[in-house]
Length: 437
Image (cartoon, rainbow, N blue to C red; front, side, top):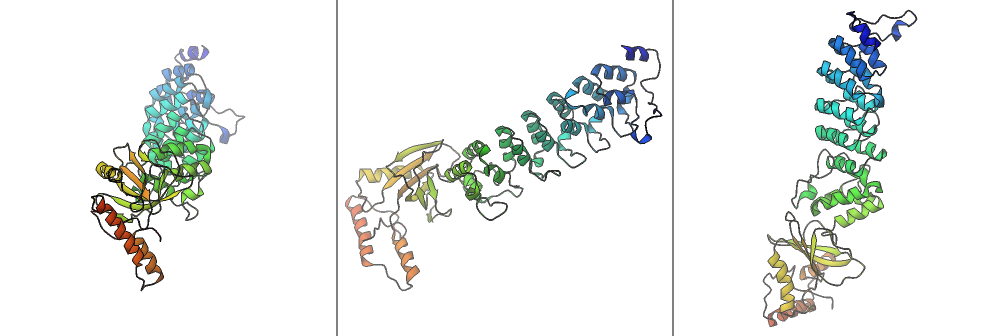
């Protein structure tokens, strides 16, 4: 090879500065050493190796534009030979931390110019902290990797190294990384992992009160994804990993531009996933988050039972016939199996009449050990003494409960006594199934 022949003549060519030709204006002259010329022209790794073998220190020199040889080489994008990159790094390992006149380190340049994925991976492995550095114009490596077609593996490694960038607005586009990812139709897997970094709730919080624990760093990535059905499968899969309380939080999160609930503004398929997800076991919709009555063993709510199939991870202990429209129900939630069994067996074993005792429509049991409460019992939403009293007080402060209603309650208690049972928790909220005369 001619280059090797010249260098072998013991001439200091490899370390000699390039002389400016007269015909080139000074402001256009890039200068530097032979290694700079070779890298600016996209030289092969063979040429780079020869030049570095004669002058290893040339890898540390910048040209008149402030570019190290590795900076110039990476600007050749997809045609860059990884052998040349490795040789330049070996000659000057600190080069991966050095910025050029544009304020970019080598990984940033490689991402901007679309070099091959194996080179991206090599640069990242050699200097992982580069994923935390922004470009000279304020853009994160995560955004550049998403925008310029890096494979998922490389993007996810950068996300893992610097998760804060998932919620950082891009300086150039003024978009979140997930917005850039969906605009470029990136994979569902990548969208899923970006979402995990920017949810309104902490998925590690499995407590029943998780619906009220919003993350302060929430930047509306979730709102963006559910506004378009392209990634509705991602939404459905993520909701399946949530507790009921977390699904409520995700559905009731406020939209960025108004005070409406996100579930009300979502795209059709995403909306359906949210609506079903906000129901207990995909079937029972609570009309209020706060219980109507609660003890240390059970909580009682008002709700609606929908004609939907149970979600994955739910065992149907019992389910009666329900029509095609939502059915008003009383919902009893408990973590205790014996309470569920007592509700079922008492009615069956003692042949209690549905005229006096609310009919059970369904009982569902979560198979997830972390779920609390585990059992959900839906039953007929009959009137209680408390219902009647509140309704009457709302109309007339001097109102009195009709004698016929008191008589109905007495009949219900007598029915139970005749069967050999006592109520055990006598109170205005649950004295019987009081029906309208």
